[in-house]
Length: 112
Image 1 (cartoon, rainbow, N blue to C red):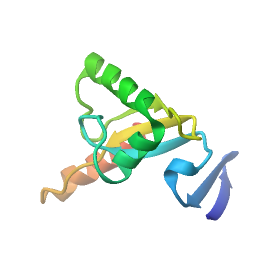
Image 2: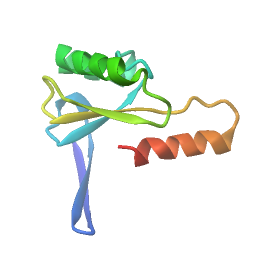
Image 3: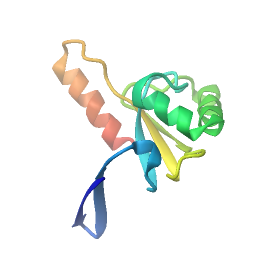
């Protein structure tokens, strides 16, 4: 596992290269799909490793607000993961409109 850290404005940010489902941190960020119901890749791995609690919380969120829009984020507990929270954010799908995609991607970082 590779770790690097930097302190800026009294906040320590640490970058870790490893299995996101096995690290003990305050929060992990999930590149979710708009359904919030898990999927393939890292999204699916987070849901599988975190267990039913993450899915149940995502369903509650969907029932309250509907799907998660591109560029938006929601937060759940981490279920069985060693992290405390999962921040689910939906990134843009490239459609040839660089300006719109860039703004939506920036929102993913700003909204969590």
